[in-house]
Structures are given as structure tokens and as C-alpha cells.
Image (tube, rainbow, N blue to C red; front, side, top):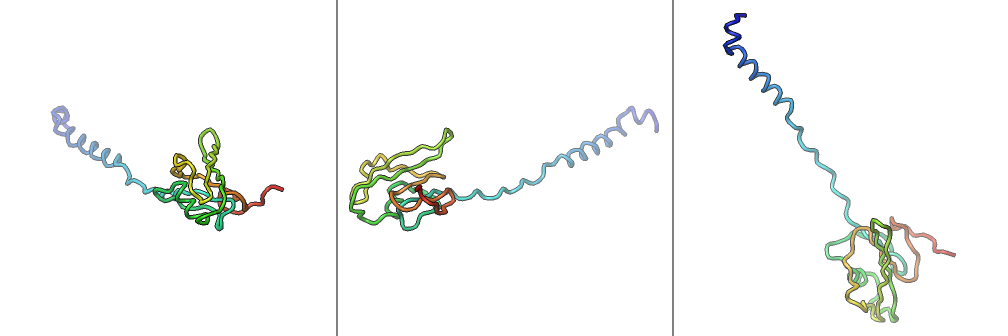
Length: 138
């Protein structure tokens, strides 16, 4: 190869251009992988209801809507249900009082439900987190 040609850059420039193009082709990021859709949010109903188990959480579900769907229109006596909520520090329990008509005694307890919440109604069998019936104590 002629030293004058090499030094003038006429040979070097096309080779450098080829190397740069090859490097760019190899570093093209792959097409993004599509992740699987997240499973739907769920909550659990247990205790003295006609159909205990896991339910899909709908937008706007709160304590009052779950009560309306799961107890008779007028239970005839006051009752207490328990909202069990999972938190980073462990489970929390909130007692919720209902009057004899099955209505919340305190509207401030009409909490919006979150994924993993459980509402425990008095009586009946309890369920495990998957909604399968378990034997009660005793």
C-alpha cells in the first residue's frame, strides 16, 4: 500500500466508516419483550356469607358495596365484621359495626378495598387466602 495514500486519509476514512456502521448495527437494542398482564386484584370474603371465597376487585369496591352484595337486606340484629388488611409491617384488623338493617354505623368506615383485603363476617366457616374452606377452631 502506498504510504502517501495511507497518510492522506483517503484509505483510512472509508474503513473507519465501515467499522462505525458495523458497530452501530451490533448495538441496536432488541425489541422490547411484552410482559404478561398482571393478575387481577382480589379480595376475600369469609365467615357467615352464602358464598365465601376470593373475589375480583372492581373499581370503586368498598366495604358498603361488599356488604350489600353478601348479607341479607335486613339481618335483624347489629353485627361486627372485620376488615383484615395486609401491610408491610403485618396484618391490621379494623372492626366495622353494622346496625340491624345491615348498614354501616359509621360512614368513615366505608373503606375502599385493596388487593389482598379480607372481610370476615360473623358465623359460618372461615377460608384460607385462596378461598378454600377451612375447619374452624374446636
